[in-house]
Length: 580
Image 1 (cartoon, rainbow, N blue to C red):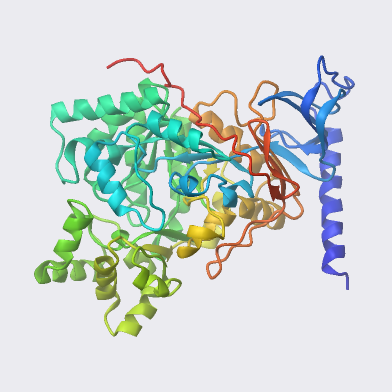
Image 2: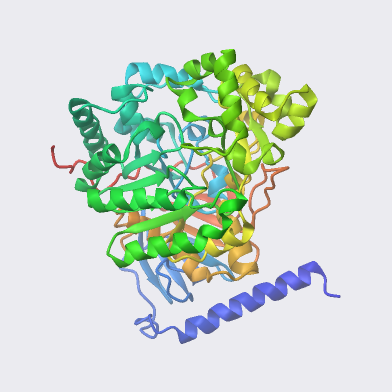
């Protein structure tokens, strides 16, 4: 029997042999026989003899990448010339930096600018803004956000997206960052947490806030429609906001109103918003939640592809796991949450209202999406508490805690929300593995962790997390590309890089091409893999050797360098959004 090391070496040899065959047969390289590219002047970094996976989806080939300052200046089968540093990439894949389309790292990057759990997977751009954003904020909103902070605490000194970008750049970060403006954030500016429709004047002011955010560099409008108060927004309101975004070159992106029983109708709403606003739209973390809905993937694909065939720019992103993660607010009806956490808590302490909430939690939901119903208490793992006295419950299921307390699971969920002073973070096991695997191969699918950028140290050890925070992108390349061969390496890299960059309207990121910013990753396609598990999620992925952000190494030979070259990446409307 061959040893594991022998088998691994054999796998690496086979992968590289395949890459070399692809390189010699590739017809897209017009300069393949043109001889070496010579430098007019020296390079800062020369990546030598790697397997170039350029982000276009074309077959890989063996070649070099030259970098000067923060830009790629040449990509070719052979580059000659002096360089201050040469990175030997023999046996490794060289690709553009990966784009995390759904990141929750704005706070964690304040605590630790390294963003290490994502850097070690090759993420060079974190995109924020699922429903809420770092601006625009009123003084009242900033104070409320400070009050909701948990393990990570800091004063909120900024009020606009531009202010936040300036703040985080000055603080120092390893990855680049970008954001959508949150539809809920602009709504709270005008309507607070009330379940009301805006009047014409209020709607006009929210539209103006979107234009201002786009002018600050937002990528578009992001919504999260299962949560209060975002769920109170009706379709015409969302169309109005998305229209302003589209006028500034932005896109609409949404955690749709439903991902389970009425997921098809929710997709219809997203398509309607795209069509009537005139802009593209993306589905956040596409899924079919709950076993009753696992059979809907074919209909979902057909609906999206029909819209795309009509010329609508509809895309999706996903994480590569069968469990999601959110709060216990997704286990209770949104009407009880009107007014924010304090009002939610007061209502839960009212015996008559509590009875009504319990009854709704125990039945099939009508008019709201219940992850409690679709997962069940045995498949709800508690991973994040604000109250130190409750932290010993971390890692237990809701069913286990209910048994410990001698209360029903529904009562236990309500009690935990009251006791913790927060919505409590939960991992919900909801999806089908075969559906997840099929989705990874869809040509219009990008990827997002739906998690923060962490490290197994310091403040991050006070709470647990979902393994996607440490393994989402490595899992795609290891499990679904290498092991299951659901898609090719070239196609997976395309949908991690140039595809989301194009969706975001970025002209000079997402590809290994002369003139592009030098966000570059170098990894071993034979060993890249996720190591994080639900039981032990805080484990770094393996197989990533080098990561460069804006031409500066942040990971070198598998070790963090301490460099903080990350920048704010602003959208197409930056300083160019037409007035209303």
